[in-house]
Length: 128
Image 1 (tube, one colour):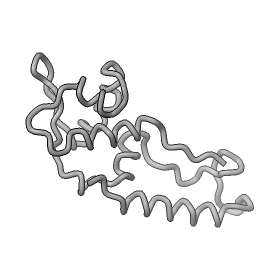
Image 2 (cartoon, helix red, strand yellow):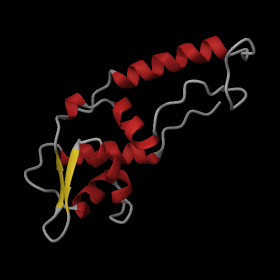
Image 3 (spheres, helix red, strand yellow):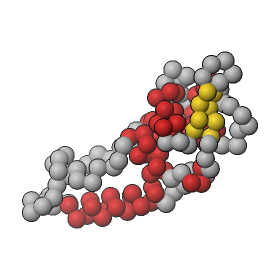
Image 4 (spheres, one colour):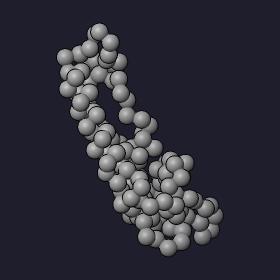
């Protein structure tokens, strides 16, 4: 069984928290330092946050990023989904492929319950 939330999710949460309470635009260098990443990798983390509407960005000298929402309205599940896409519902922990219908694996019920609880917990955990 493999359940992994990637490093980009961690970096995205760190970046969002670095923007919280900041006045004006925050330079990419400051966010990268706070999040523990490089300025060259930061756009890969920030682009989905901008696309989700949680962050705005301005290019050029004096540019940077600004939080455009309250972190209390963004859940951990929101960030996971924005960065990695939806959590798959039908992937079998034993087979690595679809699991359903009449031919379910021996862990199907337990995994479905655990997945449901995990998703609910992530959805109920705000960033702010």
